Length: 288
Image (cartoon, rainbow, N blue to C red; front, top):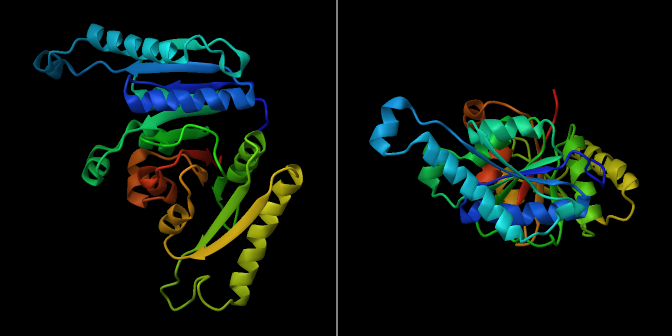
């Protein structure tokens, strides 16, 4: 991803404090990349058998969406993120689906994430989780209470095969935000009797380390101004990655677009980090 984003940033809002925090984060990111910012709110028509019971009409939902967009525009207070005027859009459709479609034509889609409890997260899911699972383009999720300023570091989760999309985006962000990058690779325990990085090295483990370093070095050559460090760990990838994070870090993960149901069944690392992280997280999808 280049330093100047020509396709722009789309931030989804619903009027909640979390979505307003996402607006703040998206505006700062637009400034860093010279990107145009679009503020979008989507609403869904309730089922006919529920609309009367709930006392909610389509007009009410449309009005709420307009209010959410106007609230976001008022928050920006006439600012021109990225040097552009802010575009305001109200769209009929499922919010996660609408934003996933927009991600195919945008440089980044941004949403907030509520601080749901463990049971709520498991049963209800969220727009942010559904969007990150299904969107073909990069998605940033800003959780409740996350730092809204510049990150102290960009922390990138690196696999031992192809971490190109997340390293590309991670190095670009570290360059634009003038901060160091930390690449984290975690080897999961081999329950058949092997050792993780916490034990003595084997030839396979050393080859795995070398492969990770080569991937990071390729992107470091492209961004010589970025100071980078590689951290190796062993254990549960989600726990190790979250333990590495400081309060002001930005996290970049890789992933592949898939249905939200499949994502829950597979319990992917990206999905688990999105649910538990207190830091802003960007998911850079691999394209099959």
